[in-house]
Image (cartoon, rainbow, N blue to C red):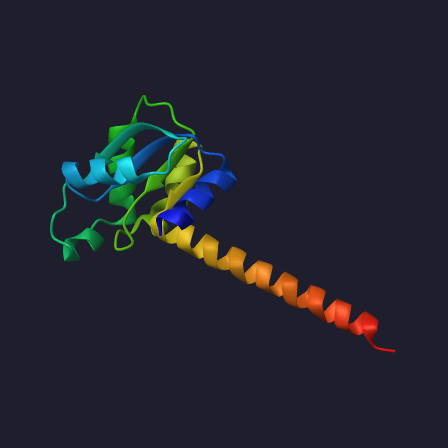
Length: 137
């Protein structure tokens, strides 16, 4: 998943990131440290949730409220929200609107990677079909 996140951050040219997680402080620091090199982590905040099932409890509105509280006054060009069980994908548009920057979540990065792979595969198939068609006489 970190490769998908890196690819999406690269494509969006995000270099100064705010990192948000549902995790405790130690795990949030680990996530921030795992963000691929070449990026400045402006800040990293976690909601302090330690129960794995409870990671899905915060609503998108609660995620946006948490971000608004923690990120006020910070300057960044993108937000990365970690955790596939966290409902950050649902909060993504509201976060982007609130802060005026692109928002990458663990799930959105994987979806983006799958779509890019699919598009590249379809393109290769179309190229092969075109090449095969031009050979037929």
